[in-house]
Image (cartoon, rainbow, N blue to C red; front, side):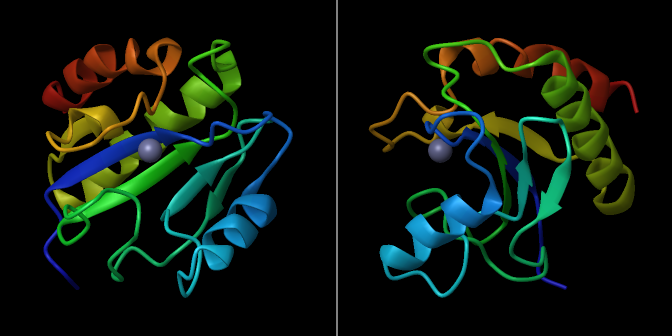
Length: 137
Ligand SMILES: [Zn+2]
C-alpha cells in the first residue's frame, strides 16, 4: 500500500447526469491508462470506485503521489451539489479516514500551482465542515 496523506475533492464540471463512464472516457482520451480519480459520486449520491486506492491517481498536477482523488458529478461552480451527494462525500471521506488515519482534506484549487476553480465554489464551501468532522474522529 502506498503512503496516503491527503484527499483532493473535485467536481466533474460536466452536466450532473454524466457519470463515471463519461469521465473515464474523457480521461482515457487524454492519454491516461484509466480514470484519474479514485472515486466518483454520481447524481444519485452513489459512490463508484475508479482507480484502486493503492494506485497513484491522475487528478492534481504533481501531487498525486500521496493523495486520493474524489470527484462529485456536476458543475459546482454553476449549481450546488445535491444533498445526497454531500452526504455520500462525507460518508466516504470519514470512512477513508477511519481506515487510513486522518487525512488532509483539500479542494483541487488548494494545490498552489493549479489554475482551476475545481471543485467549484458551491462544493468548496462544504469542505471546512468536512474538515471539522475529520478532526472530530
Ligand atoms: Zn479537479
